[in-house]
Amino acid sequence: RSGPGPRAGLPFRDIWTGTGIPKDMTASSRILGILNDYCGWRQHAMVSYPVEDHPFVDSDYIINSPLSYAQDLESNDDKPCTDIDSYRKLRAVPTVSWGSNHIPKLLKAHVPFVIRGSRLISTDETKASIKNGGIMPRWGPDHIHKLFGDRLLDVYESQKRYFRYWKADAHTGPYEFKEPTVRRQMKLKDFFTEVAKRMNKMGQSLSHNPEEEVKAKSGNKTQKGGDSTFLYLQESLSGHPEMAEEFATWNWPWLLDIVHTHKWGPPDRNIILMGMKGATTPAHYDEQENIFCQMRGRKEVYLWHPSDWRGMYPFPVNHACDRQAMVNPDAPDLVRFPKFRHTRPHYALLQAGDLLYLPVGWWHHFRIYEHLSVSITFWSKQPKIKLEELTLPLTERQLINVRRNLEEMVMRNSGPRSLLDLNKALNTMDKSSNSGKAVDPRKSRSKTPEGVLEFMVRCLCNFLPREQARIYVKEMLEGRYEDDCGSWVQPKGENMSGW
Image (tube, rainbow, N blue to C red; front, side, top):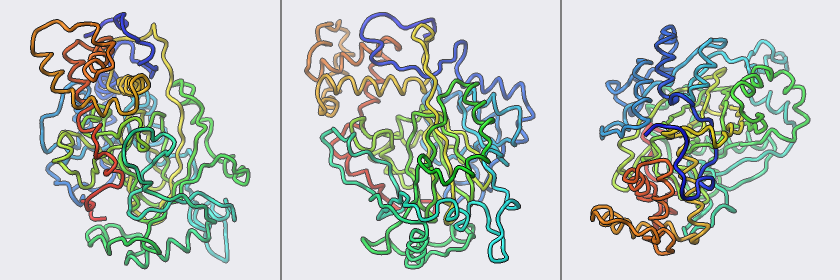
């Protein structure tokens, strides 16, 4: 329903933290307005990779029209997808050129897009240094070694190609958890040496010809230990005074103007990423705005609208892999994760000089397409909103915060196992909702599973009609708070793309 403000009742402030609310219309409806007013965008909305050659997606499924792209986002906001093959239909992420007047409007609409020829950080090889009579390409191994010297940098090691984020001190739930990666510290020269050894042992080519290799088999199976593991450099750029000269060349006025205009926090988190070909960051979403710059090589990215969280099956909030998908998009187990069928992926192949805007709440799954591809990220906190400015209905992007805070509140009040136990009470909740009998309000104060479920429903009634709130609680719990969630930390199955 629409209308100003939430209804009074159960603890509203505890389950809401602000994330810029559109005052008059949803972000998705603004997208359609942008496209209708600026038809010139159509020529820029192109697939940045020949999708008819995509390794596992039928070209008949590709949606190339930017208008179709925006209309699909509109349907994602409030209409469930019924297409059981939707997860195989890629939609192209829109692409615009540097300096386009569409950029501020797309940022305001919270839709991901790619800027070609970005000038935020230079990739211009004509500015490279001369060394031993040859060119030193910017963001190549020699250039990066010159920037960092012999500093020890954070490098993660994995038995598979997947590099899942995790946070051990956040793991307070009763779930099995084995750290999927090992953090090491290495000098760049040692990193390059170790990477070359592993690529050679796995039978992978160090050439930059992914079109040929993607058609080949994925190579030898990864074995435990030794040179068969994968390496991925992920170094924070804080505390690197030796890079001051490089930082001074970046286009900070352009970035700070975006931050100021959209009321983001300062872009104070930056990470440089460089890894072996095929290294994959599994699907997850961030709680900060992300400006993602591709500096060298190419990198694939798959994205999902915030409303697709139902099909992504995020790990429990009190799991070390919070905000990440249990389902592996490369090889989804559709028996264990049936709702993944109804997700709607978007796709881009980033190349050197590209800038990708990743809005808060959008799921993203990255894979390195060229060996030693280099990326740099800029993270900014999302803007807060005053409670009196809240309008209904909430968008899916805003409901992310409601869902997370409600889960945390329940576990804080009822214990770390509480949501796991709630799954057993779902049938009881269904029978109660179908009985036609009034619900005793005292149940919401009970610590029994049924009482906690009723408490969650009543909290959500601040934002949703009661029946929708019941459905939302079921979607929040089903398939997520299960005993087996720890077994999905290391993604299972072969990668469908050929890696």
